[in-house]
Image (cartoon, rainbow, N blue to C red; front, side, top):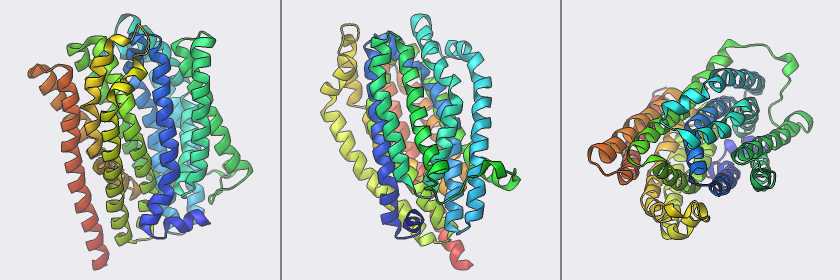
Length: 453
């Protein structure tokens, strides 16, 4: 199929061709994320802070879902590169079953403990109640997320990212349309945003399922009736998927701790500003995430085909494109900061944080300059089936660099919220350089090994 041929062709062309639809999809998703927060912020600073406080819970949900999806994508891409369709089919079958199991286990583990988790974060009063109201609906719908992302992983793994884009964009547009209707017209408040999100994911899921099971437009073939557990495949998917899941969980834990630090130096007002700044800067982070996601498939295919020079080209080219993209995005965010801040301060109850948000938007976006090194190196390790090395980078970045610098600057040096923002930027600089060196050494080792053998 054409998608498979692209994966195994010129790596530069492959990275662009595979990534373009994902970047478009993730950019639209970032617009949704922003619009979602904009509508919620109209309910007041406590509502926006509640969304921010929910980040660790939702990130952990996405961690389970997205982590498994990456394992699936990597597993299929490597088998496509090795031209082993039968094994690729088996991976796809296992993907859906594992997604169902993972979703059910997450609901059982998290839903009964939401109140305790928000208390541990230091949230209280109205902010805590709104956070529980917002997150409990999404947690109950975890199975929808996991199965949808499993299907995304199947399509990405074989390079069929156009379908990924269509499903994602249509789902996101559904969400954008339903948000104001559910939140304000139906008077559902913050829970309306959660219901809109779930319906949007169902729309994406139905599109993907139609392409896979009815139209059969995939390279791989899924027949759940013929599913037979294969320990080797399960181990392979978990080997990449669990580290990828823990990568996202480290982000959740990091935000959990960061929220506690923010509540120490800036209370719910500081958390609202931080949440607004992060939602806006996601415009820069999420497209890079899309580029790295495409690189995972390309690198996985080149690794499966043992074309390590192509792997090297794909790795460095992705970083180059990513850095150029981030420079433009950071410049735009900082230049337009006063206008962008109004997105979250357009009502009387939220306009009081406008100047603080402008200040945050002049510092926070700088961390984006170092994400190409971090995300591309993680994508490479996921692509070659070494998810544990991606986890090392994530732990160093989120649990060591971010927390260490933020606590030092905000609490010990008494810089308050400015210390939080500075800690985020310096933390990503440190992690970016570490990841890049790690990546270079790995690529050199692979090429050296191929020449010996």
